Length: 176
Length: 188
Image 1 (cartoon, rainbow over the protein chains, first blue to last red):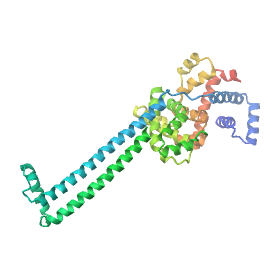
Image 2 (image 1 turned 30 degrees about the horizontal axis):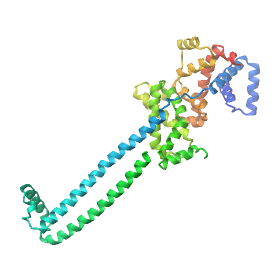
Image 3 (image 1 turned 180 degrees about the vertical axis):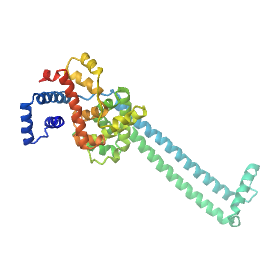
């Protein structure tokens, strides 16, 4: 009974009672002082709580969050940059290897460029490695292929760098 | 130029206009802060979690489908982040989370607050600070954020019926304390 009364009183406070339920509640309140007391109390609670206000967070809070977002973005850009540098390095290494090897084959194995012992050793090992694929026998053809591939790689590299610069410019503009 | 609506701001941020996110923060920071303070009972923790919440929301914004109000979605993230923070502090949060039959006994604290305050309002606000998390959250969302019972149930992830029961119970607790100190007469 008490629980039911409490429920009805709360529903009354929230305006959720229909006409019949209102009449019933009215009758209870008229005949029960305790119920009236409870209703008064609830009305008071409701009135006070309606005056509750939100508290203010510190003045520079918004700026702190925005700075954090920008810092995270910058850090992400930096890590993307490392990845980009890795790709550039791989491209440069590939181009150097191709052109180097083409040059080596084109000028004969006694090229002066490779006369230093360390380069000689490396280049000989590289040739031995490639001989597995039996391309040594087609040195002239390989020179042409290597030269063409180097050119393609250089052109691709140019476009990658251009695209990356455009992307960085756009990102920097959005961060500012 | 007319002010941007909340949905327009959200769309703008998703499109990449990061600066517009400031508007969204300014719209909701104080109410969310108050909610977090109710849960964490500490201003510093509340501000720290609030920052985490707005960072999370920024990165999740594209997943907001607009099926509920943005504030409901935001408060849900805030509520869960605050509970995680509480759990990390090794408080017995599971008792607070799972129990619907929450025991609330102020004992000597009631007399302390009653003697330290001089009006029904200030007394009630002090009591609100002592209430179990779920009750305090429901009161906060209902009265400060004007969320419906259904929306509150989405935020705290419980049924509408349970939410309503808890709202009524919280109000009854406050009412009984006011009646005990005859404050209800004072205001009528």
